Image 1 (cartoon, helix red, strand yellow):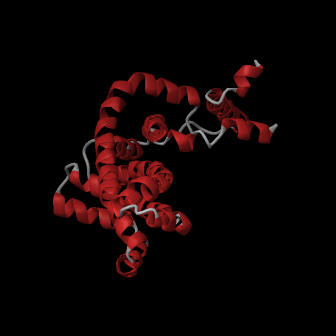
Image 2 (cartoon, rainbow, N blue to C red):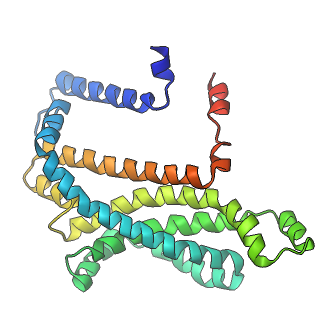
Image 3 (cartoon, rainbow, N blue to C red):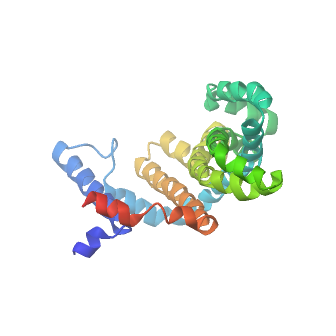
Amino acid sequence: MSKLFSSTWARPFLLILIVLVLWDLAILVFGIPQYLVPAPLAVAEQIWNEWPMLLGESLPTVYATLGGFALSVVIGVPMAMMIAYSRLIESYLYPLLVFSQSIPKVAIAPLFVVWFGFGLLPKVIVAFLLGFFPIVVSTVMGFKSVEVDMVDLARSMGSTRLNMFLKISLPHALPSIFSSMKVSITLAVVGAVVGEFVGSNAGIGYVLQKANGNFDLPLMFAALVFLSLIGVLLFLAIDAIERLAIPWHVSQRGTVHSTMRWR
């Protein structure tokens, strides 16, 4: 039993189980009606009955999420490199990037529907806008945090700029890049759902909107469970890629040190 509680994988499931039990007890003790908060059993029954539909509706959301996330990486990382290595570009672009984040994406999402229709592209753009900024900010900090002494040493040894970038700057910035990608992928899920709220006939956002209109709370909670699973699975996929790409950094995160600290 102690091994079960000490297992890293088992702890989240134990916490979910505790939350479900407390949720069910709160409904029984306080007499919360089903039309306000459904019981966990009702949500589980809805998932069991509607999982083919929910799985099918998850695909458009995943496509929009991955499209927006890919754009965030493809555009955000090179832009962050330019900002990190050029003060002139930083003075022009960085204030504009900060300003763009103050604009509510829900307010401008209808414009994308008007411009690009009800297809996949508006959702991809909204997901991109939400996931873009964390990648730029964190990647800039990653490249700027390279120690000057290390760069000077490489220059004194006759290293070219390309070699310094590939062997010093990029490996030093990769942990920050992957950390920003983890944040970006979860925000891209939110962006895809926001785009589906505004205008869509498919996706988890569409299911949530339809369930809300019909006051079908079990279906709404079931859709939220699927949406959470999408975010968790995509996060774990980025984490797995990180472990393969930079094992030297992952090993330093240290389950050993953290275990000793909590003891």
